[in-house]
Length: 482
Image 1 (spheres, rainbow, N blue to C red):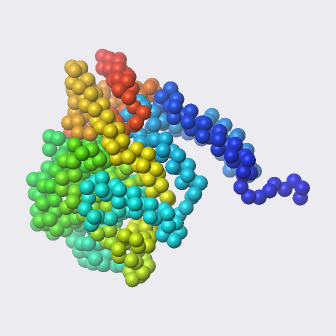
Image 2: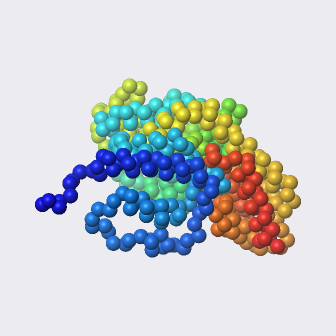
Image 3: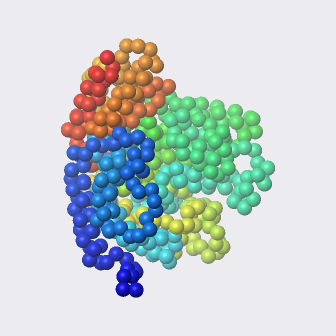
């Protein structure tokens, strides 16, 4: 029995030692991340091949585990926080966010009810109201935090379905004898709309993609015609999902006009502002909030523009009680109706029971930067996007593929040859740049043509980093396009 290892956690002295070393590692990583290769060129399975496939039977020392992390895991990561990673919507990694995540991991609370963690519940209520104020939403809107916009949109569509078919919660759609529901969204909207329709029993085929105009915004006239046609054919219009900051171009749908169609046909209006709603923090961008107060729900992902580490998605619903009445399984009389000063159990506002303490990182980051500080940083990303667009227009080999509305620029190399050949060249440019490890872009399709795309949102990205990436693009275009 003398050789028996003591039970319990890692000894406190060892934990403290590793914690200090990890703090130095994280600080060094952030300070020197720009020197790293952005992404590996390994083939699938390369990471697994370097790790022991046999499940561990006995304990390994922490220093050995972290050595393997440095040797295998870190080289196999795409470094989203690299200042020349300009794919998707940029990285919102910040030092305050990293510190907050460390505290969240140490606390490891379950924020499912007020009683399981009063601070987590009340802090969630607080940061949601801060964000509501910044978004200029009326007080009738209440919020709840989920992980991603896909989950937020699914919950919004579920609430829309329940409003149109009040007994669907208990008997399901099949027991109601209703006509097929229709959901409308633009041809530039995110695929999460289809996923939400699948999850709530509406069906992928009943998501109708509405064509867009020359600025990649939903064509409202066509929307109106599609709704009328569906009504004539005995479909039931359920909801419209309008987008503020579309995935490819960051375009903004004409929400005031869409609102009128929704009211005329008694449809739920959900706004997908996962990316673009953060623009509301800038006083000069108040225009982006037009029509929001008339919506039934709106989602914003602070992990896309508002510097909160992934993942953090906030869904706001006019009369948040509609979500509670849909998802709560406890008797209604046990739920206090007034959210101010009342006991709130956020598990009753969605399908999830266990919930992470996500509000802490938002609280830390937003206090560390303030609205003015975040707005200034967003404003700089907008400036860099406009500057990049200017460089595109000055080089006759390239053209802009969409208006520059936010920190996203879509562009294309124009060269001799048919469209398919030009598409192939643009695709090869992105692939070659990403393979180099010096920069990282995305490619997308607009009007059937392949275009390159950059997304800005990393607070480490400077004008010099942007110029570096532009030079890489120009040089690669010279190599590939000839």
